[in-house]
Image 1 (spheres, rainbow, N blue to C red):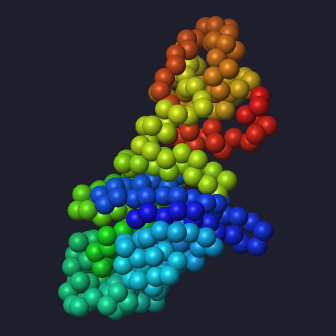
Image 2: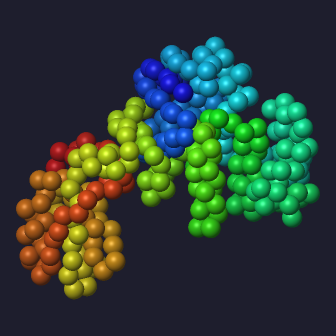
Image 3: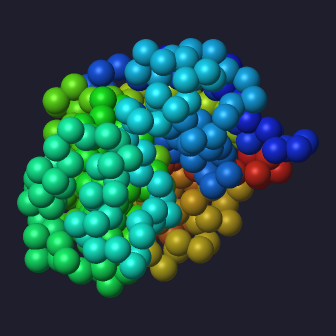
Length: 300
């Protein structure tokens, strides 16, 4: 998949601005960034659901602008909102999706999916009666029923417990290992670090793309560990130091994210409170934080 100058406008508002993106077979790309940055809109355009205002390129060998129907039939798209029929059973929801995809042996495909996703005890239950976790599992099963070569997942682990989240990621990694290209839109930046590449969105554009570690290393911030006796009590005070963006507990220490020019003030703060200060490596979440801070705060 490779697209160029992808854009979308609603009236005077530009929600996606000239985005260029490529995804290779077997690659997992994480879309990260603040709400409203255009991530979901791009997924919907790549899935053939939403028509772009400007774009060139191909998805699974089909023209992005001319062949939306062919793309929809071949892409596996899982929206953040549940797209199930609550009054239909688990089996009926999957059977309906199999018919849409035109599978040759729909019953066998549905029974295979029910078994693979552990849905056998609920096969006759209505989708509306499922818990949130099992409903998400059913939605994922429906999205993958036709063995797509491109999988687009919008917040696939939202609202899931730890075990269910791990199950989703094992499936994502197996899809990629089998040769599918996968895009995962997520607000969980720890999860995003499991991706082979990431695209960081801000203000309707991709502002950084690469391996998560590369994006983190390029963050325009410095990260410190503040260590000392009962140091967590200083979380509010250290955030008030000029240039500090955030602080959070890490073990018995405080992890402080700041602009590099704040280091002298932070060292004075540490000395005044009989604490030590050490620089550590940034994470993907630090790069996202730096991009989401209002301009007035950045100029501090």
